[in-house]
Image (cartoon, rainbow, N blue to C red; front, side):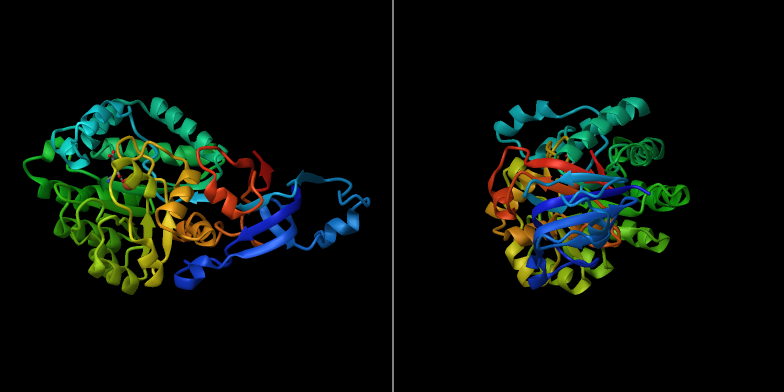
Amino acid sequence: MRKTLIKNIGLLQTPAGSHPHRGREQGDNLKLKDAAVLCEDGLIKEITSGGALPGEVEKYSSGDGCPDEGYTVIDAGGKLVTPGLVDGHTHLVFGGYRHNEIPLKLKGADYLEILKAGGGILQTLTRTREGSFEELYEKSMGFLDEMLFLGVTTCEAKSGYGLSWEAEKKQLQIVKKLNEDHPVDLVSTFMGAHMVPPEYKEDPDAYVDLLCREMLPAVKETGLAEFADVFCEEGVFDVEQSRKYLEEAKKLGFGLKIHADEIEEMGGSQLAGELGAVSAEHLIAIGEKGLMSLAKGGTTAMVLPATSFYLGKGFAPVRRMIEMDIPVAMGSDFNPGSCPSLNLQFVMNLGYLKYRMTPEEILTAVTINPACAIGRGDTVGTLEPGKKADLVIWDAPDMDMLCYRFGSNLALEIIKEGELM
Ligand code: NIG
Ligand code: FE
């Protein structure tokens, strides 16, 4: 039996429960002073506060608060401890980079113009199709190391840079292998509807047919993804095409996600609520009807402020979402085009300054809410007995400090399933 005791925690802060937190509850965090956490075989066994130690530790302790044997003891040095962060939206596996687009951006070309001119996702498509399994695997492994070091212990990964069954399958199989090999837990989303590939440029509906008739069933059969996502956007997939794809995905039993109202308000959020999607993502341009539909459908708003920052666009109306009882999650959107950063700590800073969320709401938005949006609310996202012992010891006394300091890595120690990384 592997046992780990994390003691001398100045402040343990966590949301509670395994459900999406909305409205007032978004800002409800449990705060325990002078806490300790006992982990057994990778799970949390007991949490204590007020200077007390877990019962069994007290029993076997030699007097200095350290159990005699069979335990790994980690001293948190009086610092803040939270659940490991959950990044609920990434495009983790991709070939090449897109730094060559920056001069175009600076001359005023916007994201959709670059895409229309054959750059953007299409550039990454070529590089991802050319990349070997090993090359893309190694590159993504490096990104996961970086994420873990920044405090992320669970992460979603979308395909969508292959856009043919062979190339999509390669991306999904890389995610599967990374999940087996790397400490960060991965959840896979099929995003064959990220873009119309060049072969179908003249007949986008034929590509939607291919997705529905062949690719979605093939993903289902191989079990390579739990969720299906579509980029519903001007010049990409319209609402009707998105509906067709998502309805098929729903029939097959996938959880639904939509890149909605990222740049233009297209009606993607309305569709998300209507179909009972688990999450609608981006939402920079969401309007009142979209907000009402998310609230009615119980859909989580997965907002991505680092993308707003990088594209120089507005920020999603998060205060309004919280007011309307829509659960809010924040992700990195890590990808080579619209957000080449995987730093969820920076996302938290932006949540504070740009969305005007409270530190408590922010913690919920990077732990339990994204965990629920990727089907892992039962096992991660909060610190409570029975859940995975995924924790971060921060070089900060409280969440206020963590949300305020930016540009540094404040994650001091990462504990994944009870093991110090
Ligand atoms: O979430 N919006 C669509 N997909 C990504 C960007 C992909 C890319 O530009 O390579 C996003 O922003
Ligand atoms: Fe995205």
